[in-house]
Length: 331
Ligand SMILES: Nc1ncnc2c1ncn2[C@@H]1O[C@H](COP(=O)(O)OP(=O)(O)OP(=O)(O)O)[C@@H](O)[C@H]1O
Ligand SMILES: [Mg+2]
Image (tube, rainbow, N blue to C red; front, top):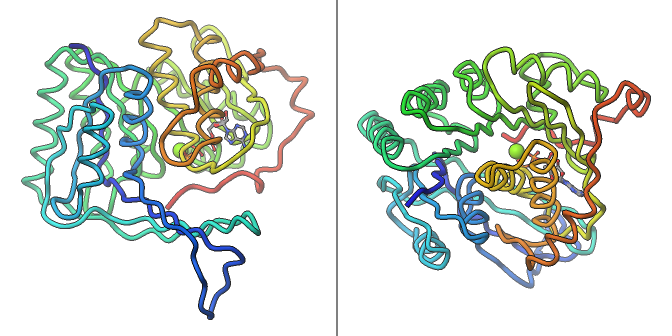
């Protein structure tokens, strides 16, 4: 069967602790704790599986305390091809304060694979690329101890087999990855600013920076800008897709949902405008839910109908956005 493959080098158990009026240096009483199996590739896999796509998930996964991943893979019928490495998956703590609407995140480092394990992931990707899998999604930061060139190397392997690849990462891994020309790249605005080395303070500036990437052989560049929406750029056109306003539960994973929607659109052969609409609907729908879940199909379809897609235009340069309101580059 033709599957979509997601790679997660550093999966995480996301622990959300719910506390009202969270304070430092005192005893806080939490009223709930929720655990989710996470990490960007795992989130994308989960969303794609939930929307009926056959998915293979690979990467490195700690062999201790990882039952939450086993349960997710079983529940969503995700083909688990993770390489098990000794130790526990990293934990990401999110302190969610419903009263102040503030979230505090504490991220722990992950496991570092050995050189043998790194060689094993190359072998796994080589094998999966030789099988009947059309799309590969490389998502998330490269953890310490893994060379930043890893995504670039894997993109070369995947493309040599004639398969398509989406890259969603930041920093040096993005730089090396873009050099290998993935089919689609989805930086957020802060990640693209870091890549080009200057602030992108208007729609036109972001469009120009994105379009330059096409010269390097990338087919579609998507630049996401949080609630401002996203730019979708290919050789023929540049579009802006603006989400409707939705009741936000957690913006964590908005980008992952956008990547899932983009690939879902590509597998359906949708054009750029329709892809922009579907990807934006996935993203806006995702943030109304906790964990990597979408609301009911009717809700996603409703949001999809409300997305506004228009061509990029100089006129909107007047509507400069305040980049300080956008999220920074994740650590
Ligand atoms: N507050 C919001 N309201 C509506 N839609 C939103 C909001 N925040 C994000 N989105 C949608 O999600 C898309 C992706 O969001 P964003 O740019 O924050 O991705 P990201 O920074 O890569 O996120 P992450 O990496 O944390 O998953 C946006 O282009 C937009 O369509
Ligand atoms: Mg992102």
